[in-house]
Image 1 (cartoon, rainbow, N blue to C red):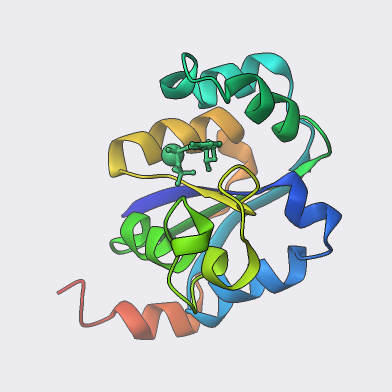
Image 2: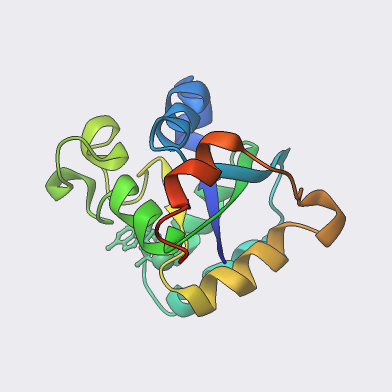
Length: 153
Ligand code: DAT
Ligand code: MG
């Protein structure tokens, strides 16, 4: 079963969008297995955005991600990495599809309200980066069991 990492970014916290964003994942029928508020330090931002370290916008990105706490979520499910990326919409919010989270709530590339893991391999690393194993919960979610009953055969 896949697990993915979502971060509700500082701009969403400032704009009071925590509930609205989490609601999108619940509405889709996804199973949240971990959730916490945390402040990011320089080291975790560098590690998380290592692929962008050489970009001219990196200093701004780092400052932004440390400007207020974030909410980290882990979600588990069948093909959930791709499902969550689709819900979030593409990086460039202005071009993100209407109905996606970025499409509905953002006009900026740098302040695009959410992070979501972009591949199964990265998701595994990113969940471990933000959550200790004991912060992730194993439980039965009845609706979820129903939704995926066919898919898992
Ligand atoms: P995503 O967040 O969709 O996975 P990414 O991994 O390419 O996109 O970039 C990570 C974050 O860096 C992105 O959410 C916002 C910021 N960013 C990316 N490209 C940018 C740009 N051209 N200007 C400013 N910020 C950018
Ligand atoms: Mg990315």
